[in-house]
Image 1 (cartoon, rainbow, N blue to C red):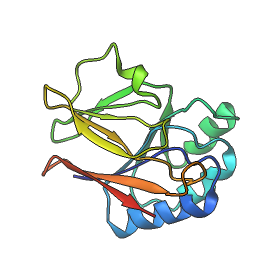
Image 2: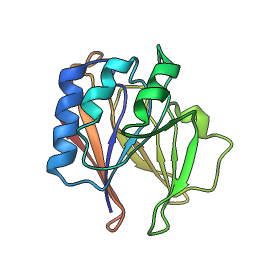
Image 3: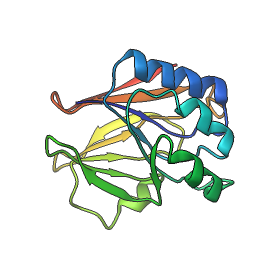
Image 4: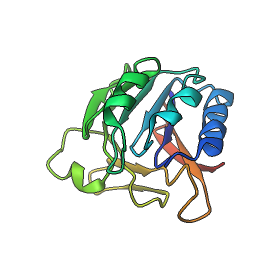
Length: 160
């Protein structure tokens, strides 16, 4: 399964639209989000996704009630950490901050954000950690997203 991953939109709608276009162009089957949409103005671009959306809140969401209401059109948004398993058995956890993963151990792939810096790494047990960086580009001027292929068990960072 090809999965699109993003985080830290911070209401940068142009880059959010680019991320959605890229996910659709790559024919992802699922989109994972690791927090910080910020406000409901981010919902309309997400309606154009061709894949289901699963995500968690970040630490800067300004209107959680509005985001929860609007996201129902697109998919699922919940408090972190959010754990689930895809059809091939890969166990995911999605959080905004890596510290939210500390008490968890039953996962194969962890998606986190918050630092705005893209990073892919494996721990000593082989679990994969993916930080897609910032979709906004506000902090470092390098908007990025990530992709994960569950068949190949490989992740990549892509610039927008």
